[in-house]
Image (tube, rainbow, N blue to C red; front, side, top):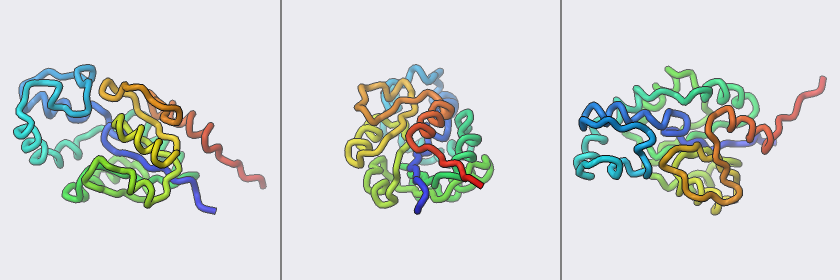
Length: 194
């Protein structure tokens, strides 16, 4: 019998949702905080030309990803889960940052069974391909669509940019500790009897 398999987004889910802000603030002369980000599209939060922003982002993404802190308790909980569940990270990051991404996981000591960088926010096909049993996400429309298409629980890590109404089956969580409680309820770990 195969282990329960989780599909896990990286940015804003395993990493802190504030990871980009120090870089944006330094380069664009802003003072943005997380509460200023009301939409997933960061260019809506401050006056910047979209093309200029994405050009800067492409040139800076490796630096940003390398410096991104992990969310509090992510390493501890994912390490505990690794014994009982398969951890498949499915990220919108492109293959151009594969080396940086794998280095980050090694440096942080965060366990994984597989990392898939798809270069797109559309994760449904990849989640289907890997037959994930639950998904962890911070992008609102991804969370809703993955749940509705695959009929699996999706844990949505709460941020100011993803506060739309959620259907039953999308579970809003504020921390990895809260995610852990839900997972233990949804996918109980069977204790081995000696």
